[in-house]
Image 1 (cartoon, rainbow, N blue to C red):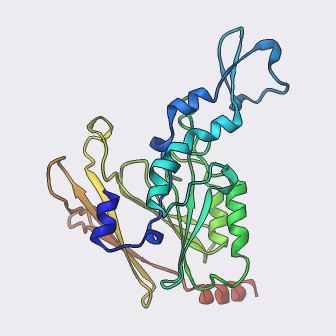
Image 2 (tube, helix red, strand yellow):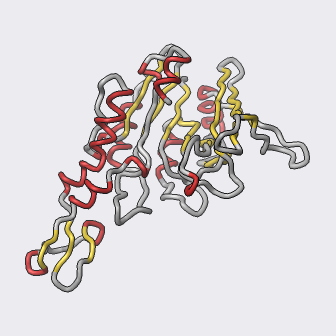
Image 3 (spheres, rainbow, N blue to C red):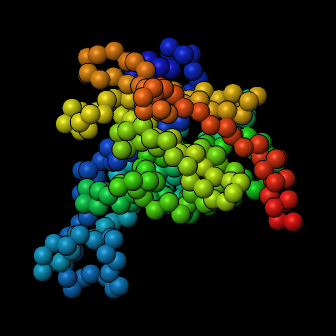
Length: 284
């Protein structure tokens, strides 16, 4: 599918941004990363997040180098092929990747919200803070001043399946104004407010394709199309849907007035120079 999109729109590989989701983990590699260790041989202190109970005789104890191999298939069979031969880093502290679009003055930050998930701990979503700090440290100079900054990961930061969203404050103060995620199979618009000036718009996409058993009743297949007008400083999010597996894609009217919903919504991006000026005035 992605090969077809690349050819159809004549894209270069540096215009593709990919982040792993929970289905990109290899369960077999995950299981192999938990060898059995007898009770007498267990280390002290024993970290509960690193082991799985295996009866009175001992524990299944995580082997960290083997554990990182959960993403090896994703890296070699998918990411490397679509990202110009670049492998996805297995080191968690490097799983915050900056993708620059200097011609458009857009910066993407691709994060891995699945770095702690495995076959046993399937709900343990989150962002590796060391990886995030390493990436944000590169934004301290004026290189990306005035750029539109967009963060992308898989899991939601609101709702029932939300992960810890404390890291959103770091994104806001470093000038990120949009985050995009999936996982919940439903298009959702949100906003994470940091202060009276800064905040991050949250754009959730539905699932473009999923097995019938995983589709949520009443929610069609979906995808979003974002259009950015830099002159107006405006983002328009168009939502598309497919009600039946063999049906056609159409506009997904679900925003605004319930009696007359629209298949799109929009919001304005803050001009960072003006935002900095407003913040100084507020401080004074």
